[in-house]
Image (cartoon, one colour):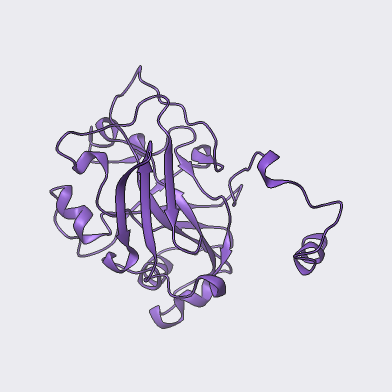
Length: 232
């Protein structure tokens, strides 16, 4: 109820209004029941990874220990690995219980969207056929800084995504390059397990990751990574 009152007072001053510049932001969804990730979901990214275009969504997961807020420091454990990579993604947040929904209805079950960085450690990810180890180190899923309701975002398949590392543009693509769109993913997943409010579906990354570049510019301590998604 208090949050509703604050939302209705948007644009007005009050004792609850703080200077954002002085705030340490947490993840926009602090305790999701599930973090569902989709791999190889952009055609050009599949090509740069030398992997076939999937005929079904590639589904894996992260755990809640990966959650981080905008601007948080992310530890790179160089004692166990060296191939640290970035992945800008559009992340959908489920808004209501979702079971066996059609693709036509699927977007009505999405509360909103946030920007995500599906950070990865490639030498651990590719060590076995299971990707989990390279995907779920601490703080390896920063989301935010804001959660934007679906009505404000509009068509999720018409958004520009980008990543800059130390000011250098690495990724710059549109969500229209997705192999499986958001509606398709929500419908597909709901055929196999129930999606609950607050569950996250991060929808894959476009081309331009370090793994796909000839010089393999892996992230190093001190690098600044800026991921952006249009309207978010």
